[in-house]
Image (cartoon, rainbow, N blue to C red; front, side, top):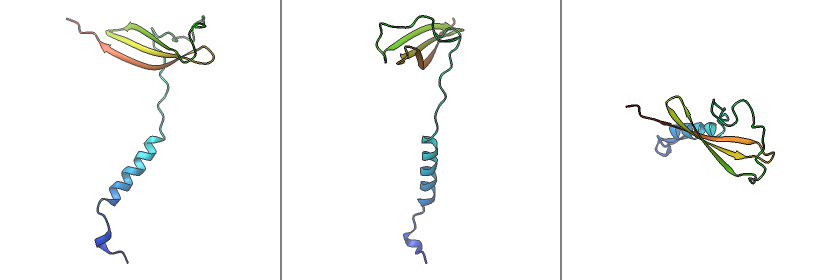
Length: 94
């Protein structure tokens, strides 16, 4: 028989949070999709970046609607560009 004095009242929720944490750790986020204005919108650029080393970071800034967009690409071993980050900055309209 289980002695009620030795059972933690926090054991159930703790196990639940541990299981949920492990489940969420297995989730992945989808890759960023190019938008109009992105370097890779419509496919990879025709010219390859041959002078930049593999793994180099390539920043790209442009306007999209009322937002300033900053994108970050990384040069892959096949010399293609992989979009790894996109930040939007709203421009105040007075």
